[in-house]
Image 1 (cartoon, rainbow, N blue to C red):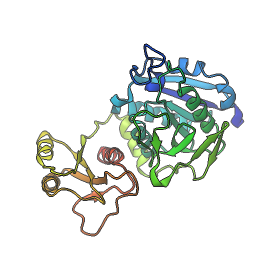
Image 2 (image 1 turned 180 degrees about the horizontal axis):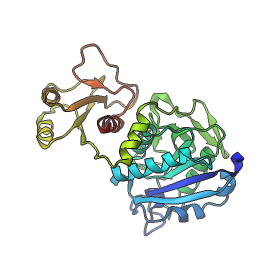
Image 3 (image 1 turned 120 degrees about the vertical axis):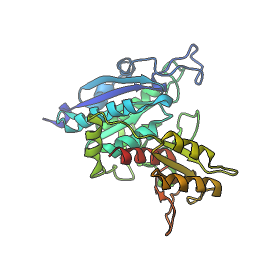
Image 4 (image 1 turned 90 degrees about the horizontal axis):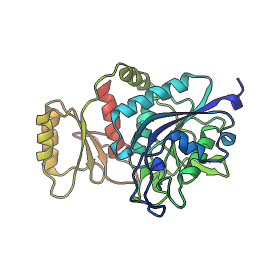
Length: 317
């Protein structure tokens, strides 16, 4: 089959890109996830020409991404895994809300052998805005999915291509809300063409197949929570979570993985009774550097929310 005849599968999950507001000038008082993904694509002229082949549209979910849940992740992962195996599929585009797109991207990166591009895109303005950003983001995402040699899970927004590991939402309302920190973006979309300055993400080995198999078996998701170390922190919340049966804890630490002594004591008690404790850092740039003799394991290169995703998957296995 010629590459140009291959299809791109577009999976809709809702988000601001599918949102509507009562007034066209309202970019923050909208309701997310109101417009179907098929209708979104129909409103973007020239999309199939950019794709270089047919677009297959599927509505996987219709939610505000602040309410993203494991069941939607399972559905996305299983459908994307099918697309990776299907020789008729060139790539996948996922429409998503901005609030948790970085978590979904890291989850999919962690569970998929993404030998083809899986491109998540979004919008900061609803579809009813005077100047919506969703249509251009969709065009750019499809262009990336259609790029020869593209692979891996990426986020495309405001003309920028971010890798799943480093991307973070860093602004609450501007149309370019994402950063990849000091690692920088993978590249940009310029007049419909992807220009990379870093390599496409490499699919992780080993655990991906096991994770998909667990999801196919509808295994229960482990309970993992985030806690934050801060001035005046106590361990009472940790003790309460342990009493309730939490299975894992990710700590958003100060600096290079430091923890308030009172919180550290509670985390040590939790670890002693079998709760997995993992440290990340509150710092937006750089990464946590483990040191000899650390009491708790570290998640270098991962933000707290992504470290939580990884811990959930470790416990799922």
